[in-house]
Image (tube, rainbow, N blue to C red):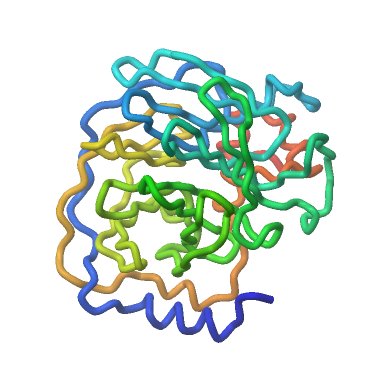
Length: 312
């Protein structure tokens, strides 16, 4: 196994107290919000191309959804939330996206090839980063770090490199966008790293278990930590001036202002001392491994899923 108990011990001890690191600042302010266009579904991630948002969603209307019904990417007007364009992703398990150049890089948590099979063994599902043009044509694919031994839940770019969140190993991974090779890694600050974005100087990471965002240096240093006021934050992006948070519960996108961080205090990362298991929150709608369990969940209404009334 790639990660040892000793490694987790070191991560936990380092995370319990980080001298010189910034701590949680004052409350985040919400400036405004826009509603996402239909259809309704699980809202997973958000990206910005300089003019419009791109939102990744999963819609599960039936037990056996068609390729146009399951995954989709929507281009959204930021002024009013209107739909500009969209394209389907089909029966794959996409979980995160980022904009690089004139392409969308979309993390696929179980790329099995041209034909999807329910109940495929987890160790046969190789994570990939699928590359699409704005019309929805797949123009390339690189395999995610560690292949099947990863759960990619976030992706971001600084214009040169990609960063990915690996929820299975609690790591942030710097990736070469040309071939997927690993350039650097550092432990994630929270227990379930999700959506990532880059603001020109810092990396931002949304933790799906804690419902907080972390501001990070490129080497992984924690510059700040803030709780989010949304019910179910799922995606994060930066438009050149403001951070925006995609909320799965309300299906809204919120423009936020993050206050300056305070001085160093305990960051509360001692939970990393525990052996890793995917937290329930970490493995719900944000990690779409399309197994028989996922097929069972397709019979639940969105309200039932949000209230955790399904027992698949």
